[in-house]
Amino acid sequence: MKKIAILGQPNVGKSSLFNRFARRRIAITSDMAGTTRDVKKEIIDFDGKEAELLDTGGIDDSSELFRRVRNKAIEAAKAADIILYMVDGKALPDDRDKELFYRLQRLGKPIALVVNKIDNDKEEERAWEFGEFGANNLFAISVSHNRRVGQLIEWVKNHLDEPEAALLDLVPDEADALENLIAQFDETGTLQEEEDLSEIGVAIIGRTNVGKSSLLNALLGEERAVVSDVAGTTIDPVDEKMTLGDKTVTFVDTAGIRRRGKIQGIERYALGRTRQMLERADIALLVLDASAPLSELDEKIAGLVDEYKLGCIIVLNKWDEALGSYEEIVDELRYRFKFLSWAPVITVSAKSKKRIHKINDMILKVFENYTRHIPTRELNEVIKQATIRHHIPSHKGKPVNILFASQYAIKPPKIALISNRPRGIHFSYIRYLTNQLRENFDLEGTPVILIPKRRGEREEESE
Ligand SMILES: Nc1nc2c(ncn2[C@@H]2O[C@H](COP(=O)(O)OP(=O)(O)OP(=O)(O)O)[C@@H](O)[C@H]2O)c(=O)[nH]1
Ligand SMILES: Nc1nc2c(ncn2[C@@H]2O[C@H](COP(=O)(O)OP(=O)(O)OP(=O)(O)O)[C@@H](O)[C@H]2O)c(=O)[nH]1
Image 1: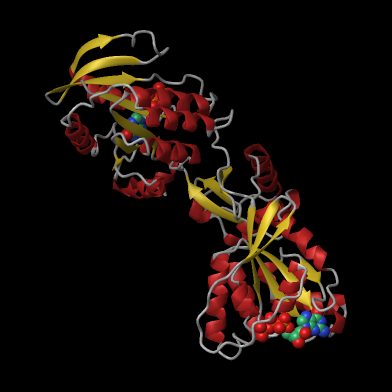
Image 2: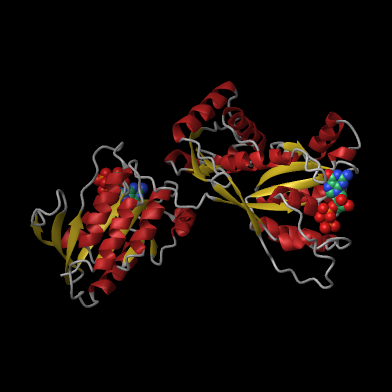
């Protein structure tokens, strides 16, 4: 007989769905031969077919660790033939669910992502946010409003019809995969950072003749033959690498940098090539020529750094021939590049290799900030204090609240502000909060992105 498991975090609606399915119950057996502590099973008549429904039980304490959800999911994944992974469509997608679902999906068993509590048409769009789970089968349903539950039942039924697997036990590959699954989470149930943080992609950008090749050579610490002008526009992206502490720095498309004079003239082409580099980089070294006035092209190139949301270090090169004092030049620069106010400025002379090591130190620091994960508690404390100091202005006469904040990505840090009226938070208030974060956490050299999001509380539906 096929076994169906309904998994998910507390309160997503597992019991409700279980009861929906189990309306036509045939027998209840209370344990699974003592193998698992609290997996109940129930034989149900599933639209004319018998199936076993595994009930992994709720987790009573809402403060329980996600680890327990995961352990139960793994137990059930071992036992089940069909897995329904349920999430609360009124909440934001949880990265831990996403990672767990993704890994369960790779086991190759029929598995569906069930986004519950999509109670009406208006709420449909919330389900789209769960598209990032990469589910092959996604059902946006409402158990309590009986929306689309029929479709889910159809899908399950189709899989009940499939022939039973010959072996109920796990094949070794699957067992290994499950072992790996366990190893990938830490004590708190958070997926350990799988992303490789040992490589830093650096793009050296700037208009022609500012000293990009000279800077690259100085950074790499050796003179290299400069490839003289090659006719034609073909670019072979060649990266050069250096080690900085325990990190590898990859300078992207150095062939393009070394090919002299290439970006001269055709501005569109220059910007296009810069884009290609930025796409592959974590940090941009924006090189400016201190011996010449800032140009419009400098500004356009700087604008791309902002657009790509990369870490940035402004390198004022040719400092040996600087046109003015440090204050004069930096004031002008800050005035023109307001959108890069968070980027550190370093004055260097690539030609004489002066202060080049400052760039190395700064690359490491900016990368640390670019990949910074602000602990939820500290993040919320700062946001809370900020909202006490300056209240969030009301929107169309209605109060706007931030319920909590949660960082959901790095490179750069991205933070969701869960609000009753996300669209009611003015951008100037977002800027204020961003500055508060910058004052409290080291975020030098990295953009920080704050995105108001809705949690889907009832009261806002009257908006
Ligand atoms: N709005 C809405 N609420 C729902 C829906 N389905 C379930 N709920 C509610 O969500 C809450 C949790 O439902 P349960 O079925 O107990 O959730 P669970 O996942 O079994 O919870 P645990 O037992 O804690 O693991 C209950 O208050 C349900 O009434 C739905 O489709 N829409
Ligand atoms: N005075 C001074 N000149 C420099 C410095 N760095 C580079 N230069 C000179 O500036 C000119 C351009 O340097 P490059 O390194 O070729 O500049 P680039 O940005 O790679 O130029 P393109 O390939 O044309 O985009 C050369 O004549 C360098 O010698 C510096 O720190 N001080």
